[in-house]
Image 1: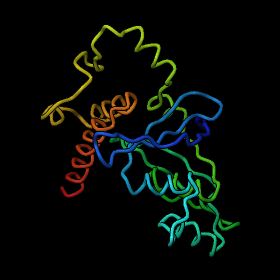
Image 2 (image 1 turned 180 degrees about the vertical axis):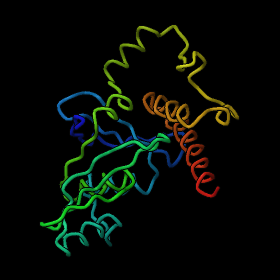
Image 3 (image 1 turned 120 degrees about the horizontal axis):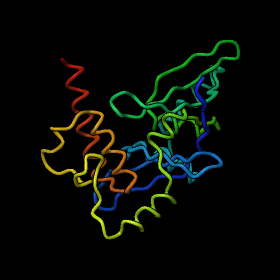
Length: 207
């Protein structure tokens, strides 16, 4: 079985230029490697409300989910963050009624929002951590070493992707570009690439 690592929620960052673009930051417990996950405003709000212990007049969606599980005696044992072949993050919810355990597919943002409400641990595989994570300390060192160099992508071109360039990239290339943009805290670019990935997935589903 592949080695797993526990993740801790560091917080949520947002792009002050592009409205509605947020990044959920998860960090390896006891380590420095981080995984950024691009999310929308509703999901960011649901997570922030719990982190800041903001009292809402009525229960939010994830509060209702947590209350429903508790009412029927179902516990969220853990959450595992995984990555789909198209580069989008997803999650498995391991649920138990005390006798039987079941795994339920979930969006990563919903899984984290639910996990922090019930105190469930969050894990990911070694593969996801190594492929999608980054070390902010190492990144700063690299930026300092190459301060006079123009950033390039894995193909040797500019790290910024403009205009119709997205249409010429494969899903795997788009995924890699999205992760690089998120690592550099360029959430506007990351959100634009994610929109292209989502659009292609939607077209594939309809075909």
